[in-house]
Image 1 (cartoon, rainbow, N blue to C red):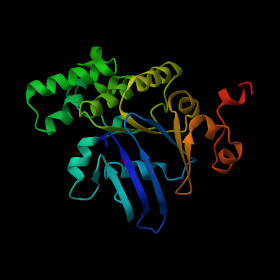
Image 2: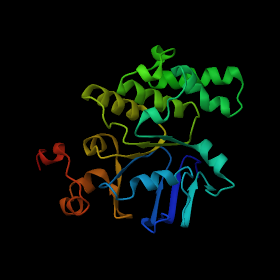
Image 3: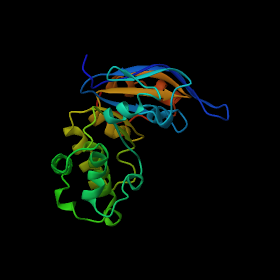
Image 4: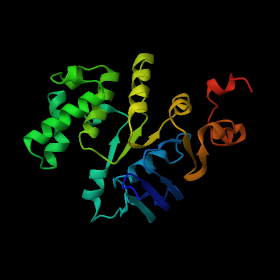
Length: 246
């Protein structure tokens, strides 16, 4: 089996205050799939994302990345395989220039200066941000920050790409550019989002979370036509489907 995959096996997670955020979640994302993770606020999406590279560890069950079970001992190895892009790009941009931000991860992997330079070039090119190389991250637009944050992850060459609300707080043009950027990626990708229009356009498969449980896993078009399921889970059918001819 390809190492570009992510699997959750009956994962439970309970916070110290006793709140059970994940209740026996199981799924597998295979090589090259773009999969959406949707659900109302409090459904468990963020907690699930934090399990993909060990920012949280299951109370019960197992997370497996490319054949490697996630444990405290395997954390460094798994974190080389999973790249997370957080909702707020300012959480990932902290160096004086864009180039230094994108180089930070590879540099901490102990790569040679030549390899770091090659990775920075490739990552910036992939997101169309070569012209921002010497820019100060704090002075970038929201869309530019999002692209650079993605580049900081791509420079690590992860096997699995995980994104939290990649289109949040973007203007229409930046949102469209981000969607087109994600469309070009060949990575195994998990996208947690409230932007169901983006999901309908970009992801063939959707996972639906509700109160800590995975309540649906299937073809996006089929799930988005299930109005009863969407209503139960606090979601609304995308406008593009509501207005489409039957």
